[in-house]
Length: 137
Image 1 (cartoon, one colour):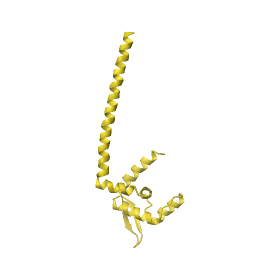
Image 2: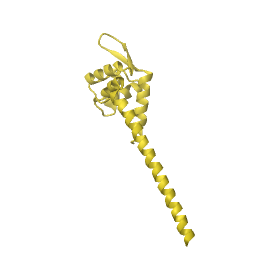
Image 3: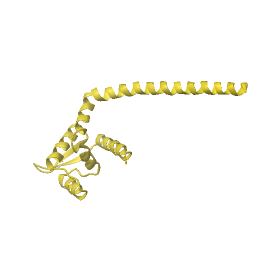
Image 4: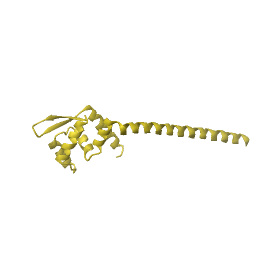
């Protein structure tokens, strides 16, 4: 009987130690996460990218670039085919912002038309967004 009580005491101390370790790890991760989040929210370069992503259809346009549909005609056909909406003005505005942030480059086709191409930086961002959103499916 005494041996069983000693074993229970040892198991109890072990559980408490494990619980304390988990709590310390959680707190240290939270402090580290807070530092990273603060850096992301206050870094001027990242703030510009974050502001761009918050706008309507920014992610849509990044994904269009990811699929090599960087011309309005290609984008319009894709969106219509899939029952989605995107105005030409919104497309052009988002593409200008995406280009300004270094996620795309453009080739002038004529005085009014451009063909946008995704950059490595843009490909990296769109790939990460794709992975994140796939997790939600």
